[in-house]
Image 1: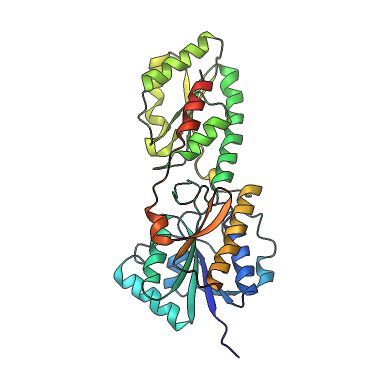
Image 2 (image 1 turned 60 degrees about the vertical axis):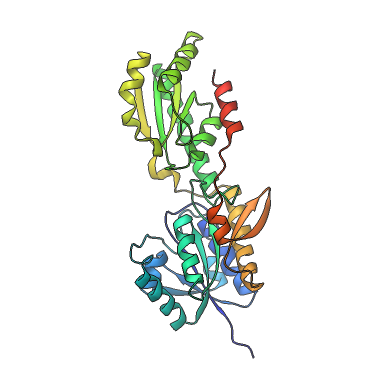
Length: 322
């Protein structure tokens, strides 16, 4: 009788809504294909600490709608070093874990690639609310983060309207402004400030003032955190407009909460496709979604794929804001 293969599953980096759905699908998919499944707690740090939990189908039965990740997550400074990578490889070999499913962003998948170069079969999934993974149209957690931000801004808009103010709402997104862009477009923001575009604050404020001339007496500016804190803009916007300007940082509420149906479906398909890719020997890959289809793309190609900015959405939003 052939020996059952062991696959480890871990989540790494920032948590994202939908990671649990991906874990569920990966576990059940891997079991379907004849694997023993080992949950690795706390990402690569937990791997180095040998923090392992054998997993079965029942353990993931009711986790799809939960935020966060039942496997926990972390960032490890030691893991990416030569010594850390060699230690992680030795531990996996000692425990007979010959393959790994990794859910995380660029850094996590870069680490997975290094493990593959040391003989571990790898399949990854992009789990990050920033939607900054160029190889995939969407990443796990992005839709939920945008939905959360829209809900918060619609509440903020009520008090902004009541006081005839401007409110700058800061959302996550260090190098990628997709959360700000999609949120701003969806809630009718008057302006967005994102890292992909040179932002002319004077022009932005002139547009807001033209709107006030038309009796649009409340304005929302959505700011991506990669362009600074909302506090950096308050005084200048108030001086340029003469309008009381307040600010709000939505912070970690964007990472939490029950995932949307889109993220549940995205993560479930990706999780199953990851297990299927392992079964077929299609490793050293990342599962991505492109034009509604799920593909296993080589990790190196995926990491090298530049994120495309949605210029059409940006231009349309600016036209509709006037």
